[in-house]
Length: 232
Image (cartoon, rainbow, N blue to C red):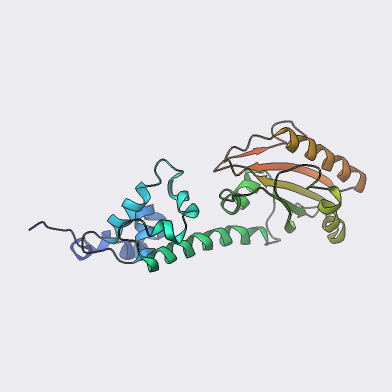
């Protein structure tokens, strides 16, 4: 009879639940964290082995981030992942995006560099299937006052109009703003339309006395700052 390693056969201090409780979540591997989410394995494998097998599917597809893109139906195609496990995974993926987005709503957050902009919005925007154009409004100390989505779709002058971009900025009395949008292709390299629209908005901001500080384009795990690239 073939012997199968069971979770109870693993030393207690090496089991995911016990490791997290004793050493902290940061010490766990991706597979161990996912194993806690899906809770149980099967007759053939432990929850950790199941998690490892699922994560292996994304090794050449963006790593663990590929889970964001899978639907419940797609997750269920993996042996050992049924309806409940698939729903648990989707819930955690969605929660991770909302936690990331919640930091933007905290007006105690101060933006000092493009990398800080990226860290705030990356998980929220890197997996989007459509282009979203967002503005982040700042006070004189570069604290976030508010953020909002202005448009959905390709970035061009007909969709992103200064009227829509600056109406809320004028209303809240911000002193500066950051422009952010994503490229669903994963490549953050600015297009000609991106550059032209940015310059148009910079000019409008100068007239209104609201400085456009930067435009950050979000790709899949990487970004490009117009300021850093000398594009504005």
